[in-house]
Length: 159
Image (tube, rainbow, N blue to C red; front, side, top):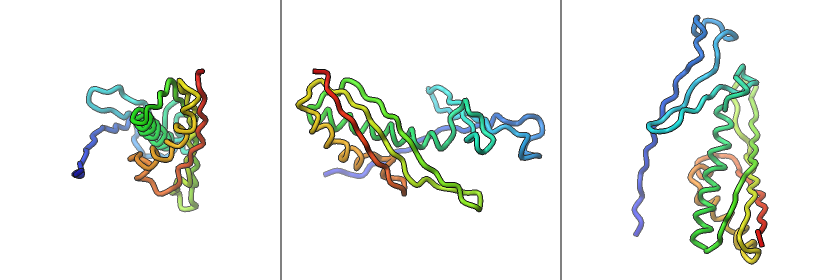
């Protein structure tokens, strides 16, 4: 019998964008911040360029899309390993759509994952394609969002 397990996550967000006058003027402070965790590399982040952010840094919206993509990949690889499907390469060109509301807020309307999966045997392509749905059902991040996460996988084989 499986017992529910509770997991806890801790990270630190630190604003690094005080240009000397804090937030006294909306247009003068920088949106830069760092994301860090114990024994992990620091991520340099900002807001979306549409909101005066630094285009060279990841923004929270991109990180949400990345979290969905990464979670799906890890769930899929697990499903493949359990099913005897040997994956030799995996990449995803994920996209997300967010709508900004007139009040200044907004929300995601969808994310689309486009996994490109390479297998060691052509005979496993159908099985691999079917495992994407199961992986999606077990992805913790996809199970936590209130918008659709679509999948358009392509599987090819080395042989």
